[in-house]
Structures are given as structure tokens and as C-alpha cells.
Amino acid sequence: MSKNPVIVFEGIEGSGKSFHIANVVKYLKKKKKKFIKLREPGGSLNSEKIRSLILNKRIEFNKNTDLLLYLAARSENIALLKKNFRRKIILIDRFVDSTIAYQHYGFGVNRSLINSINKHLLGNLKVDFTFLNIVDKKNMLKRLNKRKNLNRYDKFDNFFYQKVQKGFLKLSKMDQNKYQIIDSNLNKNFNKLLIIKKIDKLI
Image (cartoon, rainbow, N blue to C red):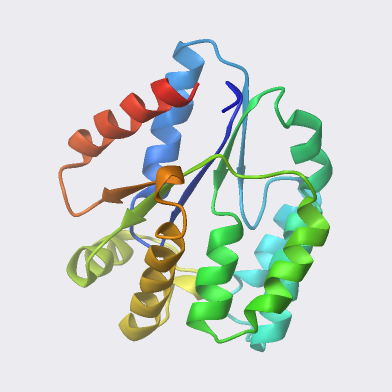
């Protein structure tokens, strides 16, 4: 594996992925490593504009429009990703697995369609390792209730989130060497150390 890997943090709402990726950013800065960090949807200027549209809680899109907006946001990041691929460590808060977990397992969009467009967009760019953060219903709701501003994807019912989380877990079993399951119901400092230990091995 390259010492400049592509590392993705995945998980449903309230699973702690954004907390942990922020901690990794601090660690890489301390180690003086060259890296970039993106979030999906978002990242580049145009992708952030699409993000604000996707997550607007006043707007309801059908499932196919939702998918295409997410992929449009990804498309706007491709030049930046390819520019830095293997030159810097790339950290991504949500990526391809989120599209499959939410749009296919959650909403039932055809998986072949998702795979086909992703393949066209990404080309040879691939993910090296994924931290999959899982959370139970109680802790998810507790964390969402603490958020001051809820977006459209923070307001689905628990059944939907459980379908998505099961989808993530199915994806992780396809190549277990490239995934680490982070049980965010456990102590967050324990998980911080677990993730940093793995990051050290990856870089």
C-alpha cells in the first residue's frame, strides 16, 4: 500500500466519523504529513454548493435526483482527488460506500447504475482503507438531539438508518482487510487510540 493512501471514514448519522477524522487531521499536522481532507457531499467550491442543495431540509428530491446530485458533487471533486492521488494522504468524510449504503440499501436505487457512474468518474482512483463507524439507536438519537441544526439526512426514521448501517456492514465484509469497524458506542478515547494506531501503520 502507498504511504500516501486514500482513507475514508464512513457511518450513519451520529456514528462519530466526523469527530474521528478531525482527530486524525490534528495527528497528521503534528506529524507534519502532507494531506488533504474532503467531505462528501462537499469539498470543492462547486461541490459545497451542491451540498447545500442536497441537505436543504425544505426540499424533497426523488431518489434518482438525490443520487445524481451526490454524484455531481463527487464529479466536482475528481480533479482535486486525482491531482493529489499518491502525492498526499487523502482523507474523505464519506465516499463511494455512503452512496451505495444510502442510495441502494436505503432507498433502493439500482446498484449497477451507481457502480457504473462511479467507475466512470473515478477511473483508477481507489480507496485504500475505510474506518466504518457503527452506532446503536440510543446513542444515535442522543447525538442527533444535541445538534443545533439538523439537515435533511438527519431526519429519517430509525428503520431507514438501520437499513443503511446494515448496508455498510455488508460492504465491509466484501474485503475485510480494507476495513476496520469502530464501535462508537464504546469510549471515544479508546476509539481515538485505535484509529491512530491503524493510521500509523497505513502511512
